[in-house]
Image 1: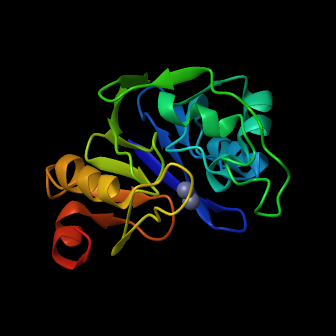
Image 2: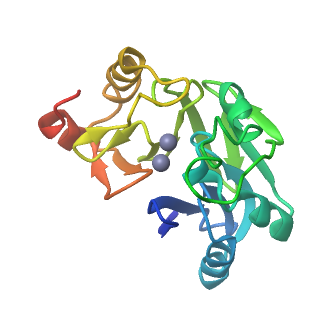
Length: 205
Ligand SMILES: [Zn+2]
Ligand SMILES: [Zn+2]
């Protein structure tokens, strides 16, 4: 399994390319900006992008979505409760954050427990509401892509549209901290961590 992190855009959102070593097929998680950089990196890694998955609908995670879709012809998936953010530039905050207004739609709506297949990889959808209503974490083998739900030493903000501090804590405690302690966590911003490290150092969990 190949995991490549590409920090993109003014908010340094982490885009991840997750590739299957056997089939060279790949999933792109959160194309926050600069679709060309994502396409170039996939090419360098000899990977073909097959699907885009969004951990949630905020502008700093979807800024490169339309261009990436146009240039690769692949489908984009988001949790069903965050699709309304994609289509509304006020709810995805692109209208406010000084970037081009983003209004788009997903092709595929996800639910908790869904398994997405990319090559031989099984990508499990874990619904973790709190940062937004439809925030998800994606688990592939021993890696968890946590979006803006869980960061190294911190958690996502809950003061934006659809956010809830009670829900994010519940999501992290009941759905993430129950996972194997050795699981590596790749957040939507900042550096990677593990479940066991967060249990020790994260004041919110
Ligand atoms: Zn966010
Ligand atoms: Zn973010």
